[in-house]
Image (cartoon, rainbow, N blue to C red):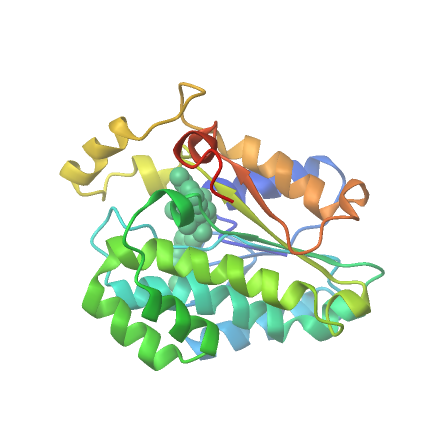
Length: 253
Ligand code: NAD
């Protein structure tokens, strides 16, 4: 199952997995198998129910790509509701279906903004990790989308690391991992709805590789983390960013 399957990294992941012979159930606001709004508890529950039914109650792999960026005029609270709660609530709702698979794998898409963007609001990260959606949405609206974005992705990566090692996940053979992409060329970074000033600032984003990433490059990593070659990965946050993180915090880990 892939959320955000209609566009960008989610759509590329779908293409890659289907080319490898897998059956994919996509979830998005439109243009895929299951239509659901992951910004609301009702939408998440409906998505989980529809996927459980379509999969016959067994989900081998779950990829959470649905997300809102900070470069278009999105309220910070809505961004938090989709990027953090829209991922972790779905993972938790689908736990029974993941448990029925033989060694399920969950991959969420975090972001290298977690380590490269200064001023991440800690109280927002904490509210997410407490599961206090009302408070997290309130803080997100207050701080606005630009700081809310790395907060949503840091909380997501830390949730993965916290939960991955618990016996009720890894003890049931379910591996939880995250990918932290750098700047990837998708509608989130090249769409028509971006604030032109903020979009211009992306040209100054340091990428030692010398170019933006392509969605299929992240999709290849998604395929690896879902597959049998990655069985030792548990609670990993894999940076795939053309060198940005290494350049900005060489020895800081
Ligand atoms: P994208 O905009 O192409 O795709 C995001 C998808 O999420 C869209 O199909 C959209 O409809 C869906 N979505 C948004 N709100 C939703 C909602 N309420 N319910 C259901 N679906 C919803 O962007 P992308 O670049 O492919 O982003 C995929 C993931 O990767 C996101 O979580 C993003 O934060 C993350 N990411 C992207 C970049 C980048 O540079 N593009 C970098 C780091 C992380």
